Length: 267
Length: 321
Image (cartoon, rainbow over all chains, first blue to last red; front, side, top):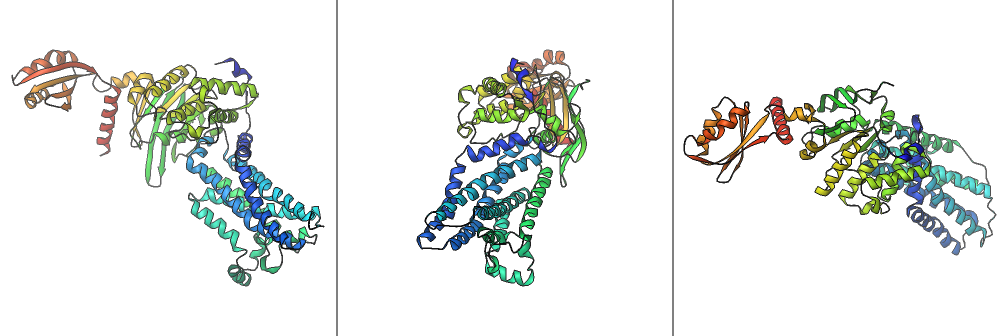
């Protein structure tokens, strides 16, 4: 047709990776080429570091401030993860852009994986790394913190794992349901059941094993045993690693189910 | 390599949602480098057929190939060579037209960047969006979105262009432009498009496929379809005792159908005939024979695609009943 045709090199990606690089570039663009990144950073800093600033003014100790920060992260991060992840799938399914991109050389697993990777990285930067760094600086200066950087980084790692759990859960639910109600309802119910004493008490009585297979113990002071991230932050050995392994497995399962479901979806 | 004569070939292709069958055993053939108009009333199954061909939905029966490749097993290979415009095209609103085309092109090409930019610029020029290339899509009118839709479908120079209602939501100038783009592309690609605008189909298409209630009711070159049934129709407008004239006309063995077109003091009929020569000589004398009516207008009317479309759909509706 025209001279430039010979210059173009056709893509030859095959299998599940077909279209992944391009879709991933686009998904990363939704974070860094729109106002999303600074809006998310602003909300994360206001919620997580703002509360610590107020606590510091009240003379809170470093370990208590760290626990407080982790608890805030454990409560706030799931909301951000659920909200963004469900919209990234349902928004595209409802608007028709999912059907559009899937009519191109893009494999359905790549459609899901691009979202997992891009939103995982975006949320990691906005809700974990940036507030974590600011918190570390907040307590290192005026409070003369001696929190080990490695221990605190480990705690932030658990924060990220907690985030991934809710993000992948919401992604999976968004492929299973067509409406936002069930997706938000189920994901929020899982997120907020941990800190609710009226749920925790009967659960500990009838299904005590649940606290080990769900991510609640990672970030929240579940049943007064202290969050696992708290142990890491103050340099103490972990009481158990079962919730960490279980959460990682849940994340993989949720991604697997999301891919399985989207492959059967009709547009 | 041996390339098949037909770009699209379906054999008993069917789709049902539960007990509701939306596509019934479709046998369709679209020849290479043709422009094929895909017609049918709303809900006829046109969009479903297109989605099946693109792998966006799965058939419940039958089979189909595009470029000789199975739609169920080789959809990836098919989508590499197809450009698609959906009925209600939606894009990422924060992107500009240029970014949308760049994003689309990168599904097909690795690079180089200059080559992709050149292709994007050329495609924007083709659809007349060059001056709006760097505006966010969220501010685009319906017509501009449709042009962008054609551009993104065309950016990979596809071997097959599938357009679902490409001229919908366009003003007459936009429609004309779209048809011109399609005519320009016909040298390079096969175009399979659905539409409700029958004048457009008659103007640019080589072949026509008509679907009704999920079933194929007519398929063939447009000339053959226009010759379908009766070759010729006449129009006759009379004033006066129209009932008597109509009765006289209906009694003639060479009159195969009479359709009333308007009644505003005068009565106009479209009269289909089996023998055009006899009709030409006899229709006016017959109308004037009783003396109670005068002839205001008389003419020969070649059958339009709209006539054929309405006839075959009506006929298939009767068969369904």
